Image 1 (cartoon, rainbow, N blue to C red):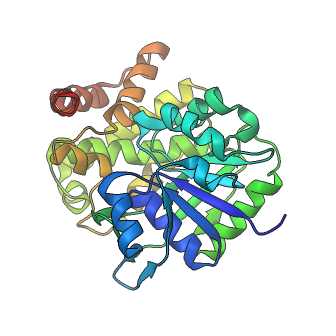
Image 2 (image 1 turned 180 degrees about the horizontal axis):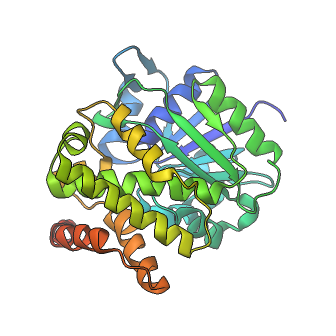
Length: 315
């Protein structure tokens, strides 16, 4: 393969960071963004700040029109969960034979949504663990922890050339990259973590340090994770027997002041990924006859705010 070309579709906290580090590593990387964020990137470059490093990509390849940067070898898709299907249609002009799209949304449904629009041939399954956010237009701030990425082919086959190229590039950009043999299980394992931390954090309006410190919220975290594990089992997903205790230990290792992106969106009165992170557990639990009382409580408690945010946005 000649020098690979990458696009990051959606340059928020996650996508902006990916684009920045890929470009810093010397890879041709473009971002598809919009609004004030796009204008700031065009004017001042894409700025990445963290506790241990700070850099600016100037000039940054940035556009609102995918056709201007087509074709590319791989697209990192980092829009919000409710935007995936629409974004997949917009991604189509970027693709050529062998191009891959890596969705990195929370939840478990994004790969299927991409597949439905673009076909399994172009679809990867992926996830990432990263703490980053848009501080202001054009500026991404991250927590300094090494981001972790996992990816695999949609059908579970051996990695294609484009996927291997993306794995190598992400590693050279400073990310820890894994290619698990069972990406579906990996997606559910992340959902188990993010549903508990996001849901309990949003209901309690508390940081991860507070959630794990107080016995009632720590127990609610455990109950939520138990329910996700049970629903996963009902879907035929094989999770490790110690996945809940292992995830709770991981939560104990996180910076105490951390909060989830869903939690921050809810606190800010914005539309959130409630449906993809919490609602999906309730829906699949109902379909499988698996009770999810803790998750149902969290879902019910957060729905009024979610509906208010979406009504205000639509207005």
